[in-house]
Image (cartoon, rainbow, N blue to C red; front, side):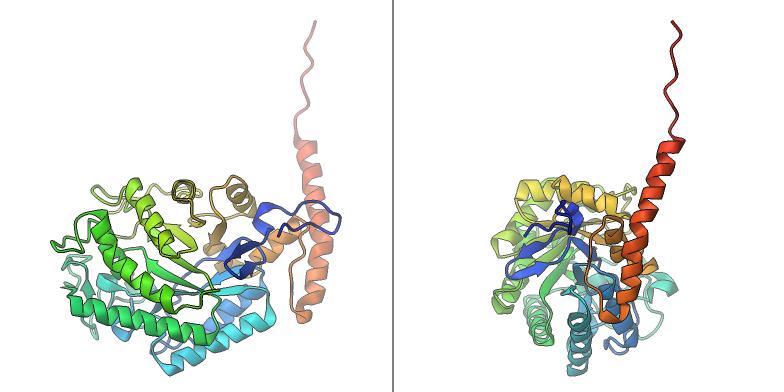
Length: 393
């Protein structure tokens, strides 16, 4: 699978292909899942077509959808996208067809349920704050509100578990019909399935609480049901919070055990995020701050990982992949500010990525000018480098 430039030299690690089951990604750069809060009754519209379509043309090997909710009462906000109606399925199929028809990017459908973090305001109106009106009943592993003023979720019963599992399965079947290349189960950030995994949000006294094996029981049950119906040749991933950044939360040992358990059930990739489990979380924020967790899980659980979190340059992505800390590198904000982030980064390294014929002249100019800009920058660096001081005899 190794790629080389036209002159025979090696392509940098972040622009090497990756194979997951029968799916081959053109490069290791990924559009991270980011909620847009812009759906109408769960239906992704023109904004979503523009958002995913323009980023796909910009060159990432893989695009993750925002958390796509499996039922109306599974939404985080009224603006969240879903996949539980025919209209939503048709809208997603339109986006998938555009991306496949105009780029080399592949699409991963991320499915989730908001749990106790549901029925909240749009991000720009007060993230995670409860709706003032129009709220729907919410459920969680245990009846613990996110904020003191938040709605108290109802503790899930076995009947709730069966219903929600069926909703996940139905949404995944719709995703397969819509043409998605990959499926991710969202088990992070304090949402429903994550609320089972963390001891901070799971206070159950039954078979679904207590030990990490018990806390894993329901999320694994949902994953197993999805893997059974998702096409065998297509990969599946799981997003987890590797730490809660709070005392008494998930340990490093827990996270490795969780990754190993999902891998044993057919998970091809662990999407390693952190936190957002409880409001008391205090992350140690910095450059590439979540990458060490991906590194540990990849090398201890022996499963492919994707890292995410304040990764802002292709140099960082190359270092992460080359050093074996992750197999894929997801970037969020850089893609929001620059839809062609990956294309520009590839040109810097002389890597030629696919572009639609309509944009061919622009790519040709980029491939001509960027190497010159890099040479000029390197020359300036050499010129600015201080000369060695002569030592007097």
